[in-house]
Image (cartoon, rainbow, N blue to C red):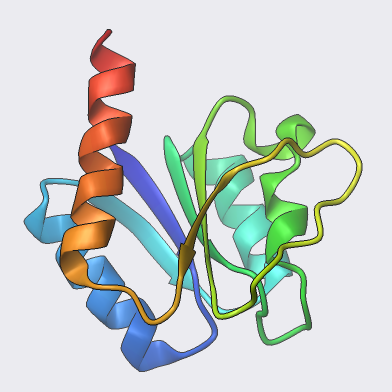
Length: 118
């Protein structure tokens, strides 16, 4: 699976990228703002988006989950927030509350793999 990670904290983004690669995923990139995320979605066509809600340019992670941009990609929001405000055009998505364990992320990835095979 091709994965885009949007995370404004470089250490966290790098750790998530390492874990995704260990799970056999192709990490297209780790971006820190929504403009970079948009460009990578348009050129890389990821299967999975791991999106921090709050990026360098504000609470813009949910903008990347718009179906007109990301198509049928599976989306997981990574956030310390208790609720995520979704823009019009987005659907409810999965949320993993920070801090989370590597095992929690692995379970979500395995669930995505199972759905894609079925």
